[in-house]
Structures are given as C-alpha cells and as structure tokens.
Amino acid sequence: MSRGSTLFLKTVIILMGLPVLAVCIYGLSRFDPNSPYWALPELEKLQYPLLIGMYLAMIPFFIALYQTLKLLSYIDRNEAFSKLSVKALKTIKYCAITISVIYVLELPFLYLLTKADDAPGILIGIVVIFASMVVAVFAAVLQRLLQDAIDIKAENDLIV
Image (tube, rainbow, N blue to C red):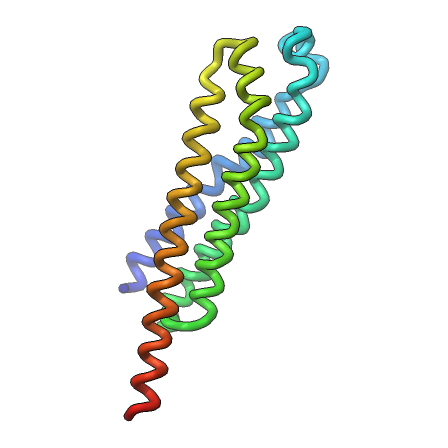
C-alpha cells in the first residue's frame, strides 16, 4: 500500500474523530439540567444515564481510532505482518464490542426518551450497536487472517 493511500486513510480517521470530539465538547454539554426540556417529569431522570453512557462510549471510540492510526503507521513502515498489528486489531475489536455493550445498556433509556419525545433515538441506538458489531467482526476476521499469515511466514522462514 502506498503512502498516499495510508495518508488518505489517516486523514479520514482524523476527520471522523473531529465531529465526535466536537459533540463531546459542545453537543453533550447542551444537556443543561436547567433546560425546560429536561424539566418534563418523563425526562428528568433520563438525562444523566444518557449523558454518562454517551461519554463512556466515546472512550473506546477514540481508543479504536488511535489504534487504527497506529495500524496505518505499521503499514507505512512495512510492519503490517507483525504482532503489533495483530494487537492493534485485537484492541479495535474489543473497543467495538465495548461500544455495543454500552449502547445495549443505554437502550432502555433511549426507549424511554423516544416514548416521551417521539424522537428516533432507539433507531439510532440500534444502528450504533449493529455498526460497532460489524466493525468488531471485521476486526476479528482481519486479526485471524493476519495471525495466520504471520504463522505461515514464520513457518516458511524456518524451512528455508
């Protein structure tokens, strides 16, 4: 893979992280407890569980983005077939699973929010769960393939 394509992928990864970081800093801070929106009796107990869950999901998201950047740097240094790459894919897999678990735990709160507000929150939660599970399965498959390739390479090095 040429440096141009990995540079493009690194740029895309950073551009994916910037809006999420903006939501962390600005968007989620709009959960003002003094807002009349959260003063509704159906919603006043939902604010903090939703906020905590969203912030908890951001931690593995940014860890996965960092591991992806590390993986791309391994590819740039021609170390794609190394234990470090397998470890990065394993971390990405666990981060994606963690995000899915956090949103599964958030679903009851999202359901109550959508019930009170007629918002599509439950649908968004389900999309996040399935998208992160797809990432986890893809990372697991790549991890397995990469580990098999490393094992075959080590076996061939012993034969020659």
